Length: 236
Ligand SMILES: [Zn+2]
Image 1 (cartoon, protein in one colour):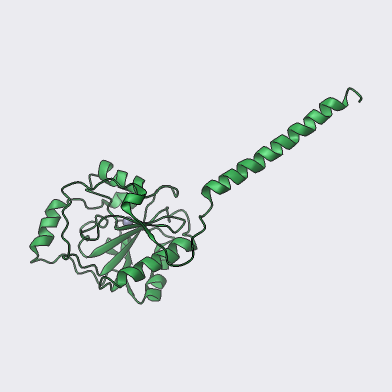
Image 2 (cartoon, protein in one colour; image 1 turned 30 degrees about the vertical axis):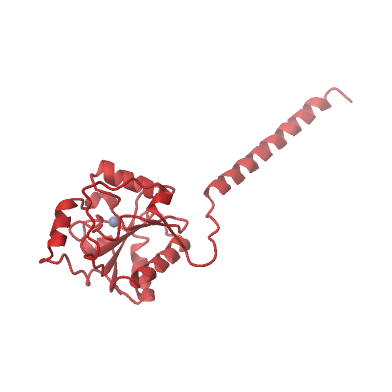
């Protein structure tokens, strides 16, 4: 074999090693971030214990039987897309002083649904409008990106399921309850909500908001026990 062919063969091998490394890295990244294959049939809700939720603050009292949700409020997390309920709960409890994660449900960018705050208590997701509003947050920042079909489909499934349990009449974006005070759920998600409401047979907007029951001792007790009210800044 001529002496000059060895380096050439060596360089050729290096080239292939580099190509295979790039392909391997690409496949690895795809495997890490690809949408999971959603199983057929109705979705399931990932429980707090399954996602490793921290126990709520002991001051968060339950008032089972007193909460009547009539408006579903949609949020975006305005966080990185791969973050999830654990990061939201940490931010709410340890940076903002909430007694638990503020939202009742979280849906990630792959359409997985996570149980949030107990449905037996008010959420902490719309300042001064937490009585009677059920908070659902979609992971991602929809000021910057467009929601994928999977989370929107799962949102519809979830709201339909909640409509079986609560007298829900309205669906609104966070900004519809606090006009001019927040961009949440983002310029790319908010315009989709009227159509979503129509598909669910609900009215769109804040018109159904009833507010706290003034004579309810249970409600005022909860208001005292749960000072957490989402600051406008949290959802930008
Ligand atoms: Zn919000």
